[in-house]
Length: 143
Image 1 (cartoon, helix red, strand yellow):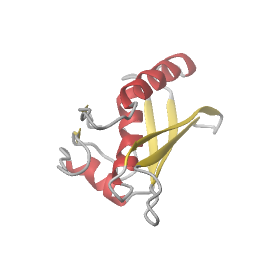
Image 2 (cartoon, rainbow, N blue to C red):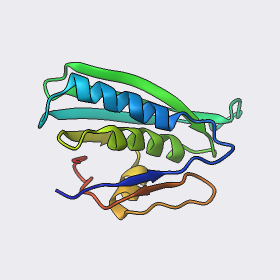
Image 3 (cartoon, rainbow, N blue to C red):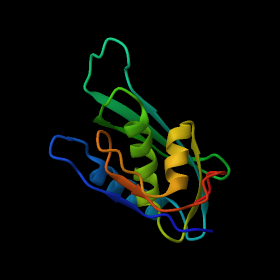
Image 4 (tube, one colour):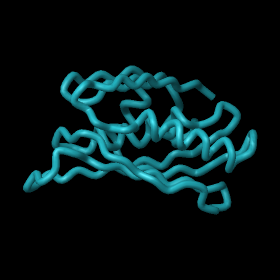
């Protein structure tokens, strides 16, 4: 198993609450799961690409036990750049950063760009997010 490390830097114009979401989820996972417990994580991002009514994108996170008992359901907003990448990465980042070190997960992500970014390691897109993902085995979604 490889370790995955992420670094989030908030830009001045970004009004996201990702650090707060990470802290909240970390507390939920600490209190609602046990050491060595495996969880299932489903993430998704959404961006309005037509008739740009909003400058924001959204993301959702749904977490269950390995027997599909719900543990957590939440989401958030991030700035939009016209595609889903920031929203998809935000959802994955929140979960990865919040996961206690003595828990494991399978993460289901429907964004190949996000999966590839997590596989490749450092991610840097000057016009998009400022997230760094260390190498990890994400072909099966395992962390």
